[in-house]
Image (cartoon, rainbow, N blue to C red; front, side, top):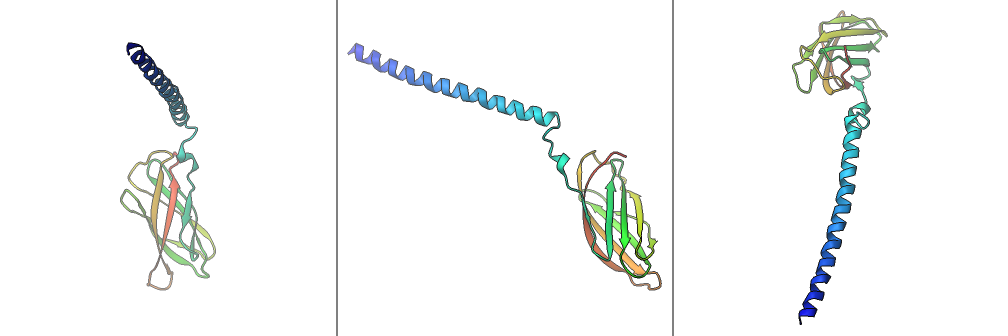
Length: 160
């Protein structure tokens, strides 16, 4: 009887050793994968912020040509007047985590592009993605009634 018990003990010992070797081998493999992915992220090779698409949309009457947000908080936007008349235009940009940026009113001649600039008063991190809600108010230079159009911009913060 003693002999049978020894055989059983050796059988379980072999299974335990195989299970331990299995877990150790795959544990080292998982550790190597985690270290490799961490190193790629640390050295900025797989940084998702590198692939941010910038976009600026305001509609067809007042078209957003280009928008730039700088790390010191300043914001530039170029708008095209697609109307057959001169327009007085005011732009308000609201970052998703800050106070609105209201730019001074300017007159955009018909079928031309004009740049608006102002500061948000808040610094942003370089390469940060910022979503802006845009409100463009415009009127004919001879009429006192303002019209409004909504837009959006997704921008990557660039160094100033």
